[in-house]
Image (cartoon, rainbow, N blue to C red):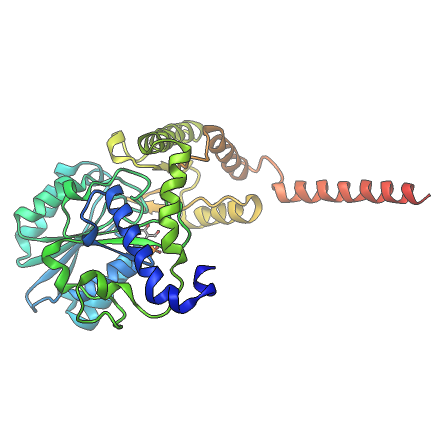
Length: 378
Ligand SMILES: Cc1ncc(COP(=O)(O)O)c(C=O)c1O
């Protein structure tokens, strides 16, 4: 409304003040200097910004793990084919053991580092997507810094789900989506760049901020709607009305744990992570053993979405099929019990799909309403 009321005043003056205030407030939430962050649309933009800004010599490489988000892998594929060479982007494979043991993970990484010289940058998740694992990024960042390797942390799922202390973590680059667990409007994300590198990083879009200091360069990227960015401030206030931050984090973490164990018990299966410290607000549960082919997995997925309006991400990892659940502040344990039963109903063909039941109910209601209406007429 403010923008439409007086677009010139909004874009030339007011939005700049609003964004400055927002950066101040947000930087306190993630504990960093307000001059070290910029607001962007999404993690895809942030990851592309960093990977396409850094200059690599022909003998320098980028490392990433097999569980990196699809967009990250494809951006690296683009870079390795259009800008660098395929040999300059190297994937490290993690399995169900290395993924949940930081020492083992670093040992596996070290094996790759022994073979590949001149690693300039590594990209890794704070909380990966599928499977969803909470990584000990503090230890990882320290490990790579000692080796002179730059760190780009994909924290798309982190802000609002777990506490983030950027001064303590001290990554070189960190991106996180506010429109996931912080409850902002889409799309809004935060990109942190360590002071030493701010002059090297340029937005994907070149606009009037070119040749200006870091934050000014990112401020104006063409005429657009800033309202989603500004909802970050409202989201932070809204959270305060629910509980304090630690209570929110801990409710979601505990629920993810309990729900994971409950589903594993109901399906006679198991959860991927044995140690709670690798679980954030999402959990990975092995699907019932009858789901043992891609076709069966896809059928279950489609039935859940189409007949029950339930979205349950399912994926294969280290030769097993898992699903991922998310524990939100508006969810309770019995929500997961319902999902658990529906999955069993579908697998064992126990019940008609609820759509048919719903359709029958709606027809009955319509029929009764018609009768009542006709009775009123007479
Ligand atoms: C780990 C991870 N990284 C990056 C992204 C990309 O986020 P966006 O689509 O907002 O750019 C996602 C999205 O779900 C994600 O899970």
